[in-house]
Length: 128
Length: 305
Image (cartoon, rainbow over all chains, first blue to last red; front, side, top):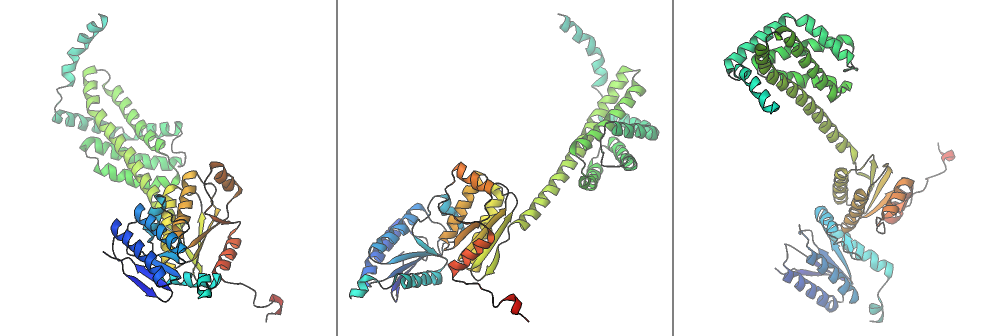
């Protein structure tokens, strides 16, 4: 099942609706990394509220998405991790180091807005 | 050879013991009980005397011991007579409920029941001791019943104690981990007392749920009231802090005592991910700074009014 990716101003929002296969995750990663460039997005929000399990592949893919989009100029925030899922992830050592996380979509967008305010307009948009 | 010779000399008495039918046992017990009832006052006195000599039930006065002894004695005989332990079970539960809050220990309860068993057995010895065969039959009937009574009372007491302990644990657990919102998006979690693995689990659950419900960005966990921490619990705390981060919240740990600080470093818990501040006040101030609050007095206190 493909994950819908919505464009919202400078941000992309990927809202996961159901459990994903490894192939779906791979597809999501490719789509986001491509579209970040196409829409010149400044941030990505991945909403995982609907997930009640997070395996190591999913966690690694989320971390990869964050690192890859960062290389392409967009900050990624993972939002909506359920409390039980969060604790299970930590026990498995899937702590998503260096990936921003937020409570829900609203918080995630607020985080991205805050961040762009702090860091100022990016060099790319300066020149263009 | 000697040993093989001694055996046959005993066997002739055996047939007189074993063929006791259920009715015969019951009849025997009835006779015993009648005898023990007749000598109730004397035997009870003797029993109470022995309880006091053995320094059991020191939490109770002599009159109280005597009153309890009377009802235990009567229930004891009832069970011997009827063979039904239900009434005794109820009585043991009731007795335990009354004496547990007074600090009566398990060994004391078992001790007094076993003393009564001995006092009565001694009485049976003096009464039937002249005839070995009869005495054997008497003990055959008496011992299983007496043992069942001792077991019933002991188990009843322990069960009641465990029930009380469970109830108290429940109560402590419910009281032990409040998660309190102090400001918009700021929670505090004061922890007092020993954290065992079960409590740690509950604490994590409460905190993560609290973060979600209150949409908190920062949580201050104050462990001033925690006397000690072991590596399991310390790692659990680290995991809690990381889980909270996955929900988008920062946890500040405050009030680490000198002992705990030394323990954590000595056992090598990775505290790199923990935000720590000296005391609760500092923790709240730090949290307010992170949330963008600035707290200042409205005016000088002397200018008021």
